[in-house]
Amino acid sequence: MVRATWRTRLGFVLAAVGSAVGLGNIWRFPWLTATNGGAAFLLLYVLVIVLVGVPGLLGEMVIGRRSRRNPVGAFGALGGRRWRVLGGVAVLASVVLLSFYSVVGGWILRYALASATGAYFGNPQGYFAAIDYGVGAAGFHVLFLLATIAVVYAGVDRGIEVATTVMVPGIVVLFGALAVWAATLPGSAGGYEFYLSLDVGYLRANFVDVLVAAAGQALFTLSVGAGAMLTYASYVDEDRSLAADGTIIAGLNTGIGVLAGLVIFPLLFSLGVSPGEGGPGALFVSLAGAFADLPYSRVVGVVFFGVVLLAALSSAISIFEVLVSYLVDEHDLTRSQATAGVGGLFLVTGSVTALSPSLFALLANTVANLVLTAGLLGFLLFDGWVLGKAALDEYEKGAGPVARMVGLPWYYAVAVALPLFLAFTLVSGLGGVVGVSVTAPQAAGVAVVGVVGAILLLRTTADAAT
Ligand code: PFF
Image (cartoon, rainbow, N blue to C red; front, side, top):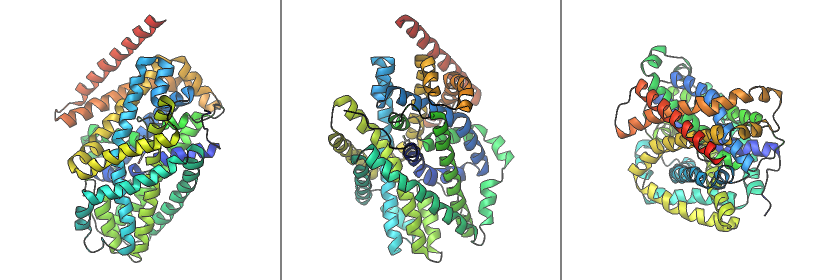
C-alpha cells in the first residue's frame, strides 16, 4: 500500500499545530501558570520551548521522516529489532494520554452544550462536582471519542488534513476576538499584571520546581515524547525543511497559548476570581463561573467551549493516529479495522479513567509528564548515538541556509545537552512522585551519571555491531 502524504505543506503544519494546540494550552497552561507564580512560570516556559522544545521536536520528526513509519516500526527499521521497545514506550504513552485527555474532552463537550442552556450558571462549583467523574462523564468521553474516530477514519489527507485546516484558523480568530473583548472588561488590568509582570524573588526561591513544571508543560504542549509528531512527520516529503516547519509549529503553538492566557487571566481578574484555585477543575469552575456573570453569557460560553472543543479534538486525533499507524504498518490491518480496534481500546480505558478520580489525577498530573520526558529522552539519545550522522543528514534535507547553519549545534544539543536536561527534570519529577525530596545537585548528579552511562553503553553496542 502506498503510504499517504500530506497534500500540502500547509496541511502538515496545520495538522501539527492542531496536535500541539489543545487542552495543554487552554486547560493545563493557565492552571500551571497560576500555581507556579504567574510570569515566573511564563518566562521559563518560553525559554524551555525555545531551547529544549523546538530542538526536541525536530529530533522526534527526524526519526519519523527518515523511517516513514509508525514509532515501533521506525525504531526497528532504523536501529534494529531491539529498538522497537522504544517505540513501544511511545505507544504506551499515547494510551496513557488519550485515556485522560478524552475524559477532559468529554467535559468540554458537556460545557459547550450546558452553556447554551445556562445549566451551570447558578452553581458552577456544584455543577462541576456533579459531572466530573462517573457514568455521565464516561458517556461524554465516548461522544468525544466518536468524533475523534470519525476524523481519523477518514484518513490522513482527507480526514485529519481537511479538519485541521478548518479548525486551526478558527481557533486563532475566535481566541483573538475573545482576547480583545476581555481587554474591554473593567478590572482586567490585574490579570495582565499577574500574567506579565515578573516576581524575581519568587522565581529565585522556587527555581527548580518552576523549571520542572515548565519543562513538563513544554513537552506536553508541543506534543513531543509520545510519537505523535514522529508519526505526522512520517507523512512528510523530503523536500520540506523540518527545521522551518518545526519552528513555525512551535511559534504558532506558543502564540496561541499566550493568547489563551490573555483571554483567561483578564477575565478572571475582572470578576474577582482567584486564578490560584488549582486542580483539574480550575478552568471549569472559575472560568465557567465567570461566564455566568457576563452579558451574553450563553453566547460567550458556547463560543469559548466550542473553540476549546476544536482544539482538543485536533490533539486527540494526533494521539489516536499513533496507534492506528502502528496497527496498519505493523499488523497489516486496514485503516478501518485499526480505527475500530483503537476506538474499542479507548472506550474501555477512557471509561475506567472517567469513573476513577484518583486514576485520572495520577495520569493527568504525573504520569503524563514522566512518560513524555522519558520518551523524548529515549528519542534524542537514539538520534545522537544510534542514528548519529544520519540524523543530521535527515535534518539537512530540504533545509534552508539558516537551518543548515544551526545543524551541527542542533545535533550536539540533541546528543548531549538536552538528554542531560531531560534526565535532570525526570529525576526531580520522579522524586516528587515517590515522595523523596531530591535536591538540585543530587538530581544533576544522577542525571549526569545516567546519561553518560547510557551514551557509553550505546557506543559500545554500536561499535560491537559494526
Ligand atoms: N499538545 C496537546 C495539548 O497541548 O493539548 C497534548 C498532546 C497531544 C500531547 C499529542 C502529546 C501528544 F502526543
